[in-house]
Every structure is written in structure tokens, then in C-alpha cells.
Amino acid sequence: MVTYILRRVLYSIPVLFAASFLIFAFVAKASDPLQFLKMQPRISQDTIQKIIEREHLDEPIPVRYGYWLKDAVTDRFGTTLIGDREIWPDLIRVMGNTLQLVIAAELIAILFAVFIGVYSAVRQYSAFDYTFTTFSFLGLATPVFWLALMLQVLVVNIFLNYDIRIFYVSNLSSPDPENFLLDRIQHLALPVTVIAVASIAQYSRYMRAAMLEVINSDYVRTARAKGLAERRVIMKHAFRNALIPLATVVALNLGTVIGGAVVTETVFSLDGMGLYFINNLVEGDPYPVMAWLMITAIMIVFFNLVADVLYGFLDPRVRYD
Image (cartoon, rainbow, N blue to C red; front, side):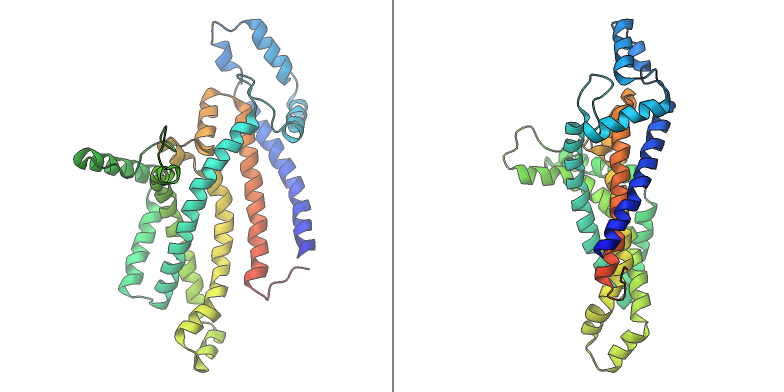
């Protein structure tokens, strides 16, 4: 197992190098990074020239990539083009906020999805199965931005009509909260719900399909023929193997959710990775955008490795040479 993990980590290095070059090349060629500054009458040509020299913007793409890669490795992605502000402290802050959102949403989604998927498979074609199958399709088809806006409208209407403030529709916390934990929960409740709804819909379908395949397998029929209780058959013999496809989907999905919470964080004005990406994209600053894309690529590669390693723990038949 250790050899396999080390080999996969070594394989990931050229993948990340290739991803970093593509990220830099595409972002660098997308637009003129100094366009916004050139439109400001108060910024002199000397100031713009100094920025060009500092960031080597007059050099070819491969040379600029080398300077950027050096800054990314040795100087934690360097500084922003506009304002010369360090990128890493901002990235750490927004990643911490996004992780709070995503981890809470994924834990809730996994718990609900496992229960719904297992019970739907055990009670196949029941009213429960049909009901949650319908809700799963609706959850998959519902646009994230629409659900977020509808929850905001619902909460605002309740607050205006009944003068009750339970949840908040923007930001991460109040200016001076009396109870920090409760205040954070009230602010994250709606965005967590938005992300969890889509994840529950996806995970429950995988769990149901995997559970149906397992409970109809030969070894489960053999366990029943031996006279084992149905609960023991389901939980001990079927449930663990049915978790394998779900574990893969969750692990692969985590990297994309962390980097892809752009819409949710923008709608709720959460100071996370998504809003950080949008703000820097609008400002036309390429270096924070490159750093964000690189962090997202690293997360996707990492969680792909996690998905492979989980196979060995969930299925004893899987062994890595």
C-alpha cells in the first residue's frame, strides 16, 4: 500500500506540472493584465512600466511561467499584480471558510444519502423508494443559483412577516456575535443546504444502485440461507461492499465541490474560494486566479488518490502491489 501511494504521488508530479503550465498559459493569454490599470488616468506610465518589469510581463510565456512557478514554490504564489499584496494569506483565509461550508454540507449529504440509498434498496418499489427517487431527480435538475435565491427569498419573507431571525442570507458572521458558533451556524445553514441538496441527490442514487447490486449477489443469498437475521445480512455483509462506489464518488466530488462552490458563495456573499475567484477575475488580476486554479487542481489530484486508497480499506479483495 505504501509503495502504491508513493508511486501515485510520483505520477502526480508531472500531471501537476502540466496542469500548472496550461493554467498559466491560458490565463496569461486570455486578456491584458494591465488593461484595468491603463484605463486609470491617475496611474502614470512609469508605474505601469515598473509593474511590467517586476512581473516580467514583456517576456515570452515560457519565461514568465518559470518566474511564476518559482514564486509559487518558493514564495507561496508571490503577490498580486494590482496592489502587490501577498496571495497566500488570502488563500489560506478563504480556503478555511470554504472548508467549513463544504465539510458540513458533505457530512450531512453522506448521512442522508446513505440512509436513503440503503432503505430505498431494501424497500425497492415502495412509496419511500418512489418518493425519494423523485426528489433525487428534482435535486439533480435544480439549478444551484435558483435554489439559493429561493431560500433567500423564503427567509427574508419569514423575517419580514414574523420578525423572526433564525438564518442569515449573506456573509459568514455578524460584526460582534454573542455566540460565535451559533452565529456561524445561522450564517452557513442556507449555503450548506444548497450544496447538500445536490450532493444528497447524487450520492443517494449511487448508494441505492450499489446496494441493489450487492443484496442480489450470491454471498448475500447464502448468508440469508444460513438463517442470519436480515438486519445482520444487510449491515454486515452488504453495506460495506455497497459503500465502495459511494466512497469513490464522494472522494472525487470533494475536490470539485471545494473549488466549485463559486455560485453558492457568490449568491450568499461568503468570503470563500468561490467569491475570491470571482472578485479577482472581475478585477483582471491573473495571479490570484492562477493560484486558485492551481490549488483546485492539487485538490482534485489528491482526492483521486484518496478514492483509490479507500478501495483497499473497504474491500479486502483489493490489494495494491
